[in-house]
Image (cartoon, rainbow, N blue to C red; front, side, top):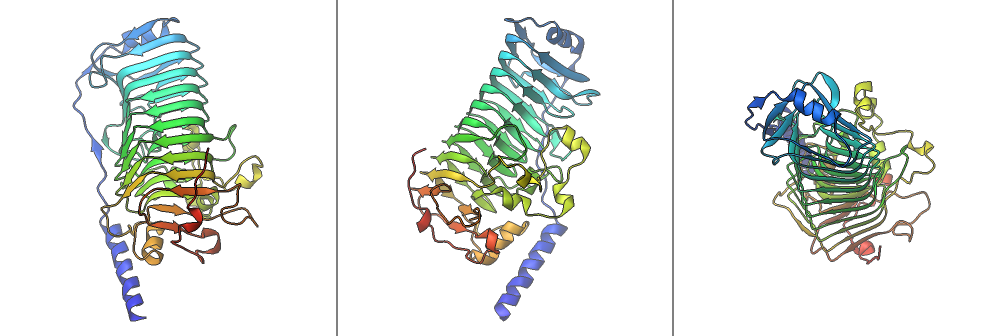
Length: 425
């Protein structure tokens, strides 16, 4: 009994120390020497014709308003390189986005950088056949909740390629794809964001060859309720996801603000996901989690689940406590295959900065798990039923946890045996 009391006291002391001395936040401070060409570049966007190229010169350019494209076809926006053509919206007074694209087809944006928009740096909506190539999207200075939500933000798009891009400092997701289909996200880097890369309510997605590091969480594969479409058929492979341990600076009440720091990957409430041949390492809470939306919606504190109007206007999603009203939404993950991945961890003990880390410290023998499954299922559905199957195959020697979260962790278990299976998706 005394040993247990000493352990509890020690945990409380560590939590107090973490509260008293918060971790420093990362910062991105490139050198800039701005040139005034706002009128000329703004005019080139306004007068852009179909089947043309907007060639942007080398230099650092400052804008007071958004650059917009609407209903354009076969258009290319090209800079001289993402270290050479810098479009900065620092001090923006008109519009929320840096570049806003709507209802375009066959659009290429490449070889430039976008910085410091009041809202999202690059938003593309209702568009088809889009290529983003070698685009750096960033907020400069120390990362902050005041940064825009999304660095690269395609939504309601189809036939999309995002390659060789960089996303830095987003207060929600660096590289985000929402309610879209037929998407390739490859060979990108995402760091200093809350979520590095996120696929939300999107289908037929390939995510490969990416690096996600020094975010709060590296990769999110989500389905959220009350949206027009729900995602499936996602393949994530050959990615390196590591050291995503920075404090969560997401807007209070947003869905990503509920993700604990030190989480490598979260697969939530989606189906037909193959996660293979990735390297996931060095996370202080968990390397990979497979969870239901119920786990996120379990927080009944209104402060943690309510967004203000300004955040909602920016497209940030909150935790929806009324998700059961959406009869087409399935809150449980199903048909998830996790195989041939490499899991490693240089950290010895779970973080005590969040409830999940404390839970693992107390119930998982002070060990950081590699894979966690919350074990929440529909009523009267047994674990590993054919319609809600999770398969782990050939991931090496890992620490696995089945939380049994629906029953207050009563049957918390490290037994991976029920999940040792193969699946063809």
